[in-house]
View 1 (cartoon, one colour):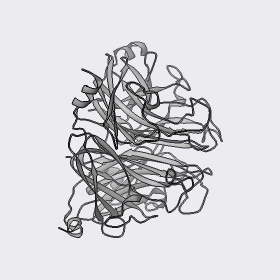
View 2 (cartoon, chains in turn red, green, yellow, purple):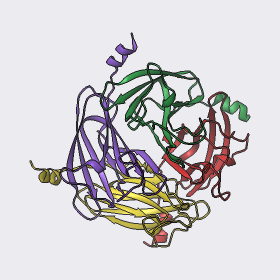
View 3 (spheres, rainbow over the protein chains, first blue to last red):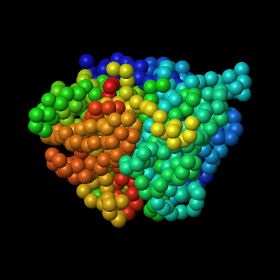
View 4 (spheres, rainbow over the protein chains, first blue to last red):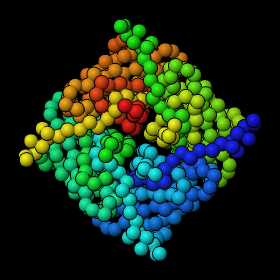
Amino acid sequence: MSAFEKIKKMRTEIGKKEWAIAEGYIPKYGTGKEPEFTSHETACILNANEQEAQVEIFIYFSDRDPIGPYKVTVPAKRTRHVRFNDLNDPEEIPRGTDYASIIRSDVPIVVQHTRLDSRQAENALLTTMAFPGNQ
Amino acid sequence: MSAFEKIKKMRTEIGKKEWAIAEGYIPKYGTGKEPEFTSHETACILNANEQEAQVEIFIYFSDRDPIGPYKVTVPAKRTRHVRFNDLNDPEEIPRGTDYASIIRSDVPIVVQHTRLDSRQAENALLTTMAFPGNQ
Amino acid sequence: MSAFEKIKKMRTEIGKKEWAIAEGYIPKYGTGKEPEFTSHETACILNANEQEAQVEIFIYFSDRDPIGPYKVTVPAKRTRHVRFNDLNDPEEIPRGTDYASIIRSDVPIVVQHTRLDSRQAENALLTTMAFPGNQ
Amino acid sequence: MSAFEKIKKMRTEIGKKEWAIAEGYIPKYGTGKEPEFTSHETACILNANEQEAQVEIFIYFSDRDPIGPYKVTVPAKRTRHVRFNDLNDPEEIPRGTDYASIIRSDVPIVVQHTRLDSRQAENALLTTMAFPGNQ
């Protein structure tokens, strides 16, 4: 079996349908060339399934009701690195504000959280897998 | 169903009632504008439930008995990013000292650990999900 | 029993046969002495078994079909820190492009994801355990 | 019940008896004031039990047999942040070399992996929970 055939037949159901990220913060400003070095907070989503994933993101705050759902589609066998900075429907996520998020999908996905903080001359990076729900 | 109705009806029980963070260290000093760039160690807590979470934090050391509980309330459908620096009842957490923590709640929560280290001109960041207990 | 005998007899089956890393990005350039400070993205694999691990890596993109498998062998009781930068069969992983990966093995392994970003004068580091599948 | 009585009665069995860290690397040099800013790699261990933990650390390499066990004791209700740099019995862990580790305990513990890299003027930090075994 050729590599091409193998990748075509490769099947996996890895992932969960619900994920949580308790940490969230989009800095108000950054330094460096945009958009590569714009401060950003990202939910990296992998959909390894053979069907498209309909994803909904809900944002939680410390002092107001949650907002959402932000709707994101991830095609079959694709990854999508969603920048929270870019979400604007139903509304923009406020800058300089603590938040958290829950991410739901109709098929199993894998979610990893990453932040690039460019408020200073040298960038700082952080990442962690999101916390998976039971399903 | 409108987005508003959907967010109102959104239910989840994601999380656990007990979490551990084995790493803890509040640097003795920092650089940069306070409080944004004060060195800090944070437990980001997400309570996605429809009821308030009563949270207790216990701090463990290398050479003395643990202290606590520090009591924190996280309202329903809210996040709270707790800075260990700010905990002062029953006592302040000593600076420049290794510690670890256990976080307990009466309802399921999600806990993520983050540190901003500003001892030098450029910040360093780290994050990880805390380790969940069985319940 | 001597330390030597103990390490010889030490057995473990820790790990899983399938892992996912949702975040992937090889910067286009870096600064500093190569190869130590070349920007790189790494999958650190631990094979604590008594038999060799046959590992296959599949790379997912946002806008094209996945590629792979990249074949890696990890001998018994060895670790191998695989730099995605070095993978070139069936093809090089493009720089400056979002990707994700799935890693499969015929025996249980442990996979941890690390990136050194040296695009700026001071390096940034990130790490997280990969997300384990059910097997 | 007073805070003192509560902390005395606080019981938990959080943790596992086996953990793996697939990434390991002690840089050959660092900058800054020692030992605070010495490059170091740490396994932060939390023993929240009421009995002492007898811990053994095994180090795996890419091109030689594993070494160990390094024996570490963590008293009841204590944390110990073990620097791999300091381990020297049965032998020092070589600098500038990829390694991985397995950590075993006779009682449940929680293990978190942290590295401070001070090879450059500004430090970089990384952390992740270690990967837990089944027990």
